[in-house]
Figure 1 (tube, rainbow, N blue to C red):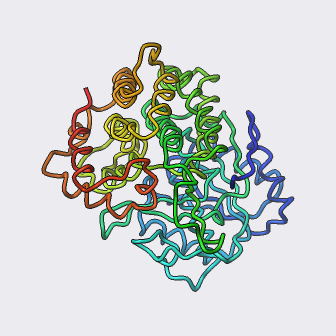
Figure 2: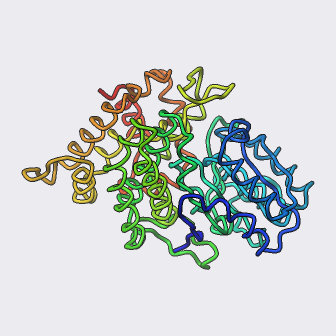
Length: 419
């Protein structure tokens, strides 16, 4: 079980200068994106660095939904700077980019594909020591401050993939609920959907003791191990918080209690899925994001088409959980109950249908786009979407129910319209 150190509380960002002093950092790389560089979270970090006399260079060129090219740009900056510590201020895109920059700057002779997940890359284990990385999440979504995963779009193949290794986990995650107050409504929603799916997928993933073969050496044990008794605790707790607070956090930006709780839920779900893993919603989401045509989401200040990660994940969730529920239906039913379904007279064989309907109602209440068709996809795109899902074995193999290409086609088709 691997997890970053976490510090939580309003205003804890002001301690980051002291943390870097305590680490003896002499040259710090501060990573963020163009939008955030003008917002209060980055200001709070800059003030603390100034107060404690920390020498740093800022890289604010992180791309929202990073690509291999944007990773490589950040890696070049990191190699040139010869930094001895890193600070990432932002959502998953920033934290993941910073993890990759730290990894390749610490392993300067490695080829980019050496550490990228197989079958796209070589998936080599990380054996070099990395520099300390402090992550300051500004969205309540990815849980990237707790995990050893960094996701990017591999442009050539039009598919998302990533790097997964406990070695790239942040040294410290600073969860300061004040940072979520500057998030616009749709960013709160889409980030929250990521938390929802992290919790649901890790709780329903193939159990750890049903995976085989056992790795010949512990260094080869994957970061994502299947559902397990420890991850289950975190996943269920995160799911309860989502059920209670997500709608409130979206509807009222002044609801500090709801936004603070979603910030915690993001980290809790991160601890769960960072060890158990995710499965089909995430595996199928990568081509949905990677093959985007013209969709531009509301509230995202970007100059390129993009499907926000949390949206690409949640749009298939009703179809996916209807499909996986025949394995461990009691877990699917329990999840439906936490999300508000009345299961007193429910039959166990209807677990998938009940969870799917509960999710549909949840999404409908939050004005989520009506399925893949609403973000620009049609039946003609299904073969390409399936093709983009097939290389995602790192996560699709964690589905409790194995799936064929025909199954994946049917799941994409069922996700074209939700309501």
